[in-house]
Image 1 (cartoon, rainbow over the protein chains, first blue to last red):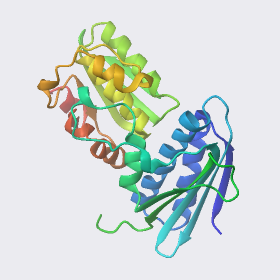
Image 2 (cartoon, rainbow over the protein chains, first blue to last red):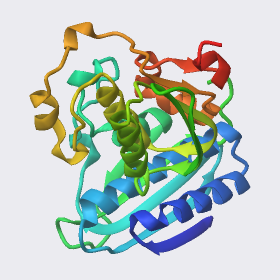
Image 3 (cartoon, each protein chain N blue to C red):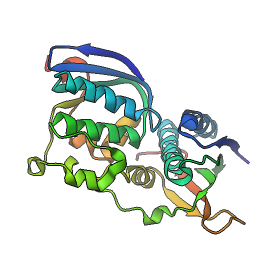
Length: 144
Length: 134
């Protein structure tokens, strides 16, 4: 079944969300790199939900972590504006500082640090509202 | 988030970071770094040896401060592309600059620096002495 956390999204709860992921993913047998990677992924996504999804009107975010065979699976659900990360512009990490945008790094990091990253509309959600994001990574990093 | 500000000289300062650097506090780092620049600091060493976590918001702070310490106007991250393109950039200078120096990031933070390309833009040192050229 895994563990769950439900909070009202704000920048002030990011530390609590990270602490939950660190504890839950670690408790599922993940190694240090996978714990760090999934903490980063969830933090980056929830930050986007807070800043760009809910904006001035905070709403709920839930985080669930479970084991699926050799993988750790983390699911984040919200009721903010629908946002498809597949539409995010690619981030050029080789661009000089003067030519790179300030945004877009969070999604790029999630793509880099997870083995799969999928977003869908939550079941029964009002069109245009809500996101269910699933991030997956092997519990044991191996030689990576 | 800050443990210490050590003024090594009129133009060199070391900022010790601890705890977690995220979207809730990255602007504090930008403000402190900009204040030090306004006071005459031209080389800023960020000691990350006690920093436990850094999100991409921290990278935004490093990015912004790197531009400030190159003598460019500070940017509002919310202004995005437009502000960046409006900046008078010595883009052809490209390459690494050492006005901003990083010290002893953890393995997880090093991954973030590497994946965002920051570790190729600003030098990373194993300890303060190395960063200060000791």
